[in-house]
Amino acid sequence: MKPLFTIATVTYNAEATLERTLRSVASQDYARIEHIIIDGCSTDHTLSLVQHYVEENQARHSIRLVCEPDSGLYDAMNKALVAATGDYVVFLNAGDCLHSTDTISSLASQTQWRKGDNSHPAILYGDTHLVDAEGNFLRRRRLTPPEKLTQKTFLDGMRVCHQSFYVRTDIAKQELYNLGYRYSSDFDWCIRIIRRATRRRLPLVNTHLVLTDYLNEGMTTRNHRASLKERFRIMAHYYGWPATIFRHFWFIVRAIVKR
Image 1 (cartoon, rainbow, N blue to C red):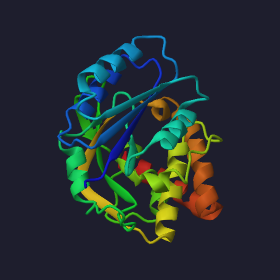
Image 2 (image 1 turned 120 degrees about the vertical axis):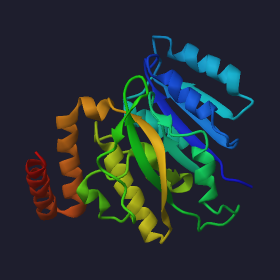
Image 3 (image 1 turned 45 degrees about the horizontal axis):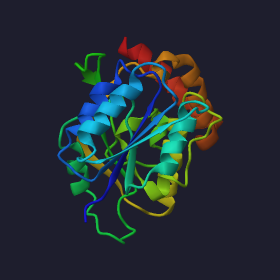
């Protein structure tokens, strides 16, 4: 049996960007997909788009909608983790798309999945392209995935985009998002997932694939300064103040040199 992939999409008044995300999931040539949509009681046409999506695609793959108030983005994402029943889970925000129609089938082929075998990769990760509001390619993401993912990888920043970071669901459920972080809980979550997987000596697989077309205007982008402050705190927590301060000094030097 092939693995089941849970794709989680968190929405609130996302009518302007959601449709192409839904289309990208619907176009996958892989059948074993569970799409969970967590909506915070949208007041625009988001739910109408979801209803149409369900009517058109419910025979293609499993779709579940949860519509209820939440305490913010990461609270909604925790709801998705709790609800997920797939073997792997990934978050795909409104406006973001799977890169190609065979993205999930290509991932599945790299898991070497066997039911009941607990040694499958903990993480499948890959590259990301940035796109504009119309879905047009802008550039490859500046921070590229490392050949080998380790606990220290994120000292260089978020080397793997959250939307290109597929995690075994049994592990993801053990590491819910920290609601104490408003903008960068995904950064903290990825580090914790890597640490847990490393302790269990599970494979972390670089797929060498472009997995996601990422909309270049998310919550973190809009709140860039606040996000950077949170990331500094997170890095200091995991890597210590000296390493964090030194690395940020290097970030500044690198930015000056590149001008």
